[in-house]
Length: 252
Image (cartoon, rainbow, N blue to C red; front, side):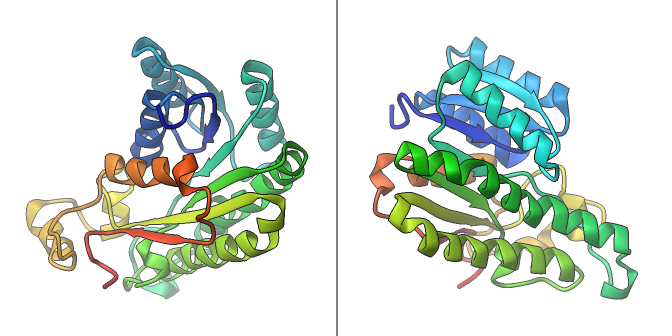
């Protein structure tokens, strides 16, 4: 039980990587607060955790909104009394397409969900973590922020921002015993796959992308959850500012 006694918040926890992280953390003893814009999806994941013997609550909310972060914090404290780990997993993308075809609304949404959400999480939790004597942020970025693919210019840029912000936060918050790391998944089997590809997810189209990954497959929620588990655990107590690529060799 590597997370016994810890309370963790997982944004975007109603599906994909977030669901994998939430369920893995719960199996390792954590109390889990499952957040998602899709309230029923968050409730489903929390219910499945509870049925498996874990402890979880669901909190619907939009990570781009300050008030929703306050609601998330209050719910976690009310149910579990404290918070040790925040996983900023919620993310979105514009469809893979030429840069001049991306609308302003698409650009604004990508940066609000992928970057501004980190701003709000820091505002909400850094004062609390300081008062508690420490805490952990795990930010889910992407290999797109290290080795960008064409057609995803503004998504690539948003994930690069997550990476450098995580490193800068690690430096600034280290004296407060607040660790900040990020994970860079390669393209995974999530609901956004066809958007990343910019085409229908057929075996032939998928193979074009698999050919760029040396280990020859997409990332899975369990791959990302395993990395997050390590970074959240006390085994990683001296690890901060890391950008961990979970990518089958894509960024080599």
